[in-house]
Length: 45
Image (cartoon, rainbow, N blue to C red; front, side, top):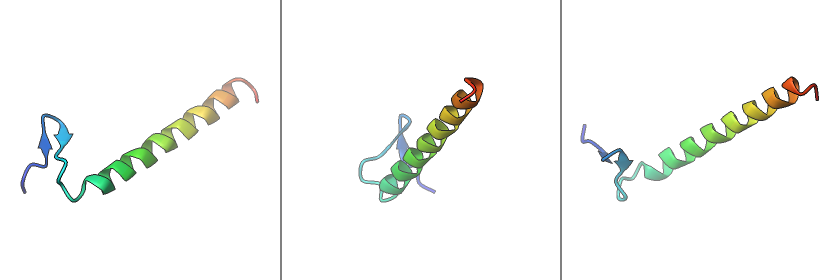
């Protein structure tokens, strides 16, 4: 398989780039939601 990364970044013309960016965004959103839930539980809310 051809390496799609250059110095740790996906090449601009890689057709999978949009899918990877969307997946990364959804992961970060899920992490933020978990942090919010933990924070509220810790604060007794």
